[in-house]
Length: 551
Image (cartoon, rainbow, N blue to C red; front, side, top):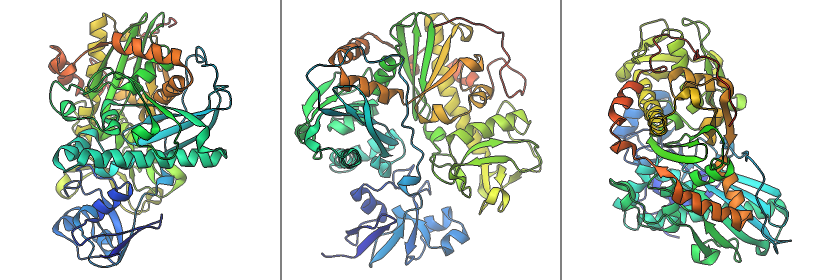
């Protein structure tokens, strides 16, 4: 091999690179996830890895990294090409990631397909951040095994728009990302087969759901229509092909069913949510929200379905937050401020030393700052013992000082972080409000609010209510349903009748384009205030009249 060798730890994966290859590009070629909000342009400062030996720091290294980090050999992966044999340590091993795999369905699959005794299938939820796969017995409908991983595409950007920009700007960028995700899925399939002790030839079916962008990248479709208004997808209908035609190598005899999409940013994962939760047949009023970079919101009023996509941005996934991170070991996941002048009470994933803040804690912090009067409803921080000026970041709330909760460095939540949360929560609150307006219902009429997806299941609902992220409903009506999209994928795997239901619903759901809605601007502006609309208090929970009925 020519060129220096680059070794990635802790996996031990290695690659020979040219002198023009950055560490980030090398990691991408191996499918290794390195966080990069900016897509590798050196502006976000999050692609931090440890070099052995460490190269001289660049200007952007000096801009984003502390003196201690520089001394430890930490550099930005996008800033350095490899001149000699080098070993780098990825800071967040994939096995430490907290990935949501459980889910609940409203009822059993309507009717299992006949003639599949002894055959196996895999249901896949292809998410922006994670991929979850379930090995199912097609004859009995029972689950045998499950596996999950970070989507290797995160090396190309944390959010969908950054990845799409890469595809449009890089030569063969679309094929590069397609091959990246195919390799990742093949890894998951191999893990499933190995863990279950079965043969690859016994896997005869695969079903896959995902948002529209992930769907297009998986199939190698043109994504230009998704990047520009009016955001038209290249394909809405479902697709069935052989694994060989798709490009999956680990299961040579499988037929792959890719579920239908609804609109530009309402994909088959939302169809999975609708079907698995029975939203097409409820007798009352039920809202379902899957909160991510794009929050998909569905409202069912006696089975009449309406939906929208709210561009929340990646703040709730830790991106664009100064010390935000994924839900991994060392991430602060919950925060309670008992005394505004004293250290906060922290809950950390893995009971490790805190390294950053994940989405559930981000919501907690804003709710707690509001409750304790450290921010007002406009989001403005107020001077206090725990709110200080820090460098170029302005006012910051000190989540932990070195030594507090075993923290190794100061962890802060900045004024700009508060603003990012305000924008994200306003987008979701506006989407929910517009759908309720369209159907002539209020929050009092909502019988149940289903929270789907990882973020929706790890947040404290009381914190989400406090900041106005969710409609003002009684706490006991908020129901976490886990990976509802994955539950839908299982149903599509086991039953052709369920696929037919998906086809019908995907065409019958009314889609609302938020950006073009006449009430959007006014609602959004009102929703940027922290707290429930019309609530002038700083209470940590919503006080509303008791109202009961059944969906």
